[in-house]
Length: 460
Ligand SMILES: C[S@@+](CC[C@H](N)C(=O)[O-])C[C@H]1O[C@@H](n2cnc3c(N)ncnc32)[C@H](O)[C@@H]1O
Ligand code: SF4
Image (cartoon, rainbow, N blue to C red; front, side):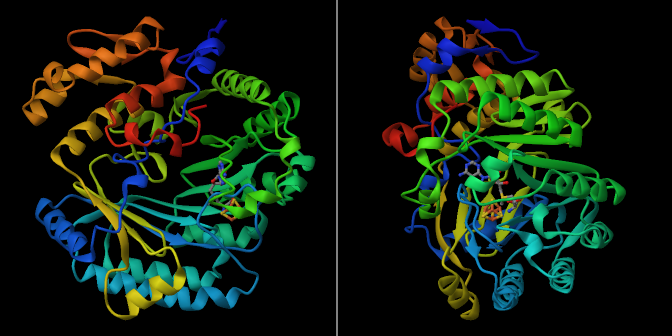
């Protein structure tokens, strides 16, 4: 059965047929390829090469702390009510900035700054200001830069929001997950509707340039009807962007998820109905389907970047400014340079020890081969633009696309026969039906994953 929606079509039979596991392609090679054989000196060499390229910068700062545990959470968090825990962390984070910027050519403009978590608003205003001042002392932030922060709406007030805006943040994101109180109780995240509308009104009063909210489908006690109400209330909140994550249930990696009442999870069929309804509601209420789980208003910069061809993916999801190289600071954060990715230690103690020793706190990474770089370009074009012009790859990498990818083009044929993709001598075009299954198309070009297919969450 096929339902017509603007720009994306929901085909139940095909979605069920292609219900396989695949990476989310926030990077290529995927983060699962990061290995401890990549050393600190490998990263230092990658930084030196990046300095030569003089590419503008993006910066990510990870604040891992949260006041209380949401039972669904798959993020890298440290749960503590003792706010003193943030003090040594900030001290080390600032030291890391000092150590690492001694190696980075910081004459390059910073076009994007993002604070993520965890919960960055775990920090008190003076701590936020302290970190911000350190960042601006060490980096040249472009006056037009996108400066964004993730907040937990349960722990902010009006003054805090106004303060963030005044300090320099101009984009903001907060988690809703679900408006329904039964769902909220089951996931240990109670946040009344009035609170969410208050937070949004303060954000609008402060004139943030773009507001994102996160929802999750597949949580306990969700039904088609309750999630329809959540979507309608979210539309009434009027954010610029909405991300609707598929609940990633990985209790072997995130033991907190063992608190989730399994018997209350919506069955697979109902989840698909929820997804279909979500897409229908959002796309008929001024939100464009950007890709994967992202929706944005037509004038939001994500939608503009998709139209301009400058949209890309990084570890935060879809993002603008394709031309930057990303440096991540803080425990677990990931740097993405042109030909190397590096991740910091996850355990605070390991991270602290490396920083105190004056060593870059890299715990693992990956050096990209030329083949990885070519495939990344193909995969990112498919994921971000649903379209690939073969001559773009041929001109950039001096290869014959059809020869280099002869096996992949052969493997795309059954997907073409199912209507997911249309292949011509010049290009690969993902159809409206294929858009929801774009990971299934991208994975064909991914030599790393095909060897270890089972590690990833389901595509839908
Ligand atoms: C760092 S949090 C957002 C900021 C803030 N900590 C909050 O919760 O409001 C990132 C987002 O990841 C999503 N998320 C976390 N765990 C998830 C999971 N297991 N499956 C799908 N999405 C998840 C949630 O939507 C959450 O808002
Ligand atoms: S969803 Fe946000 S607030 Fe909840 S535990 Fe995860 S990072 Fe912390």
